Length: 144
Image 1 (cartoon, rainbow, N blue to C red):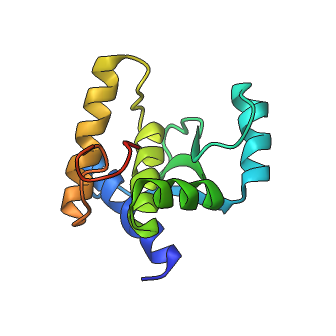
Image 2 (spheres, helix red, strand yellow):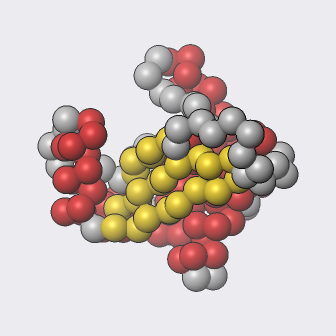
């Protein structure tokens, strides 16, 4: 499966799990650590790279297609994390794509209850894709 197919499959499943088949658009950018570190600093005030950032689009009432926003993924960070956690790159990329899309759909993990809800959705979507639970500490070297 190509990287584009992995991204499309993960995003489609994440969106479909929440909104069904309603038409929607989003952009997914795969970038390097330097670029995502710049975005992380500019938008979140945090130094250094992160694995995924989500930028929700403004609502456009009456639009035929929902514009969700942008998901930006750092290929280098994701690769390092996958290696350190004993995960396949494609599986970790899928998980973080799903995570980013859920943020675009309004989910967050600021509180424990929000984190529990978001993680449960991620687990269900990943299971549907045949991908192991990324939060199973017994299965992987570290939790993601």
